[in-house]
Length: 164
Image (cartoon, rainbow, N blue to C red; front, side, top):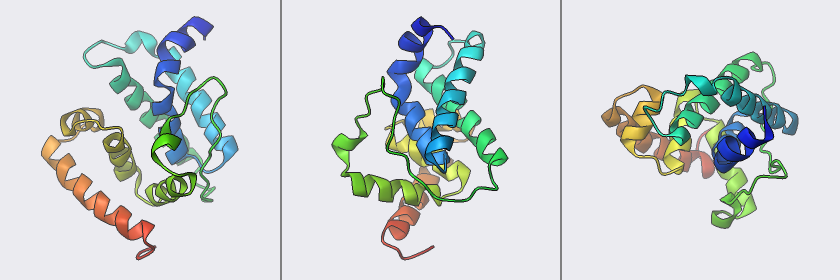
């Protein structure tokens, strides 16, 4: 992968990749492996980008697909871990909106969701429209709306320790 491609096509969307990798990885090592694999797959499949969607939407799709594939391979390791480390050349603004502790609690709760609900809520937290989420997930926008409401309720219960 060329440094120019990384700088111009991946780095501007690194926050997307970080959030998805953080939500699906179980250790610092996993996080780094997932991030690297996502970047590699984006580079390898760059010629498959048809332009029918935004580049960022395509980044989401590739990131989710790679992380879900890696997660299936790594199912044997079920430890919960939230990585606060990010690649040194990436600006992570998530700490602006959350205290470190509450961000970790949110990620711990999100990690308890099934893989599909985890992906949906990550996209929702990125302020994607229901239609965009539906497009990325291959679902109906109305279904996404219903699922988001259910996921929010489940997360409230998880964060407040009312369910396991």
